[in-house]
Image (cartoon, rainbow, N blue to C red):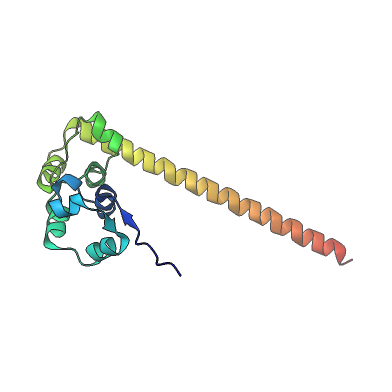
Length: 145
């Protein structure tokens, strides 16, 4: 019987899964593959450096976008290309520039449209299921005569 090989991932993938900026992680994290077991252990019981990065940053663009309530494209349109710290994000939220106000409004509209489409599709499924149940009942009633 062959021994199972431990699955590993690149440090960049592990950093993304942990929601941290790879370049801000310690050298030992950046320089070697991470096993799935090690990743789960880091996530379940984060060391001090991971807690610090998650709390204060610098944060990767997907985290910055989420904290600001905009899309990654919105960050690009706002010319935010560098990682931001939590303090920098809070400063932007406290005194939002015009681009941030616009992008947050756009993101709100996108989410509203996604909800509307999801509700519409759910209603269509409900109606289709209702029609199918009626047809089945009518067919069953027709055979019972």
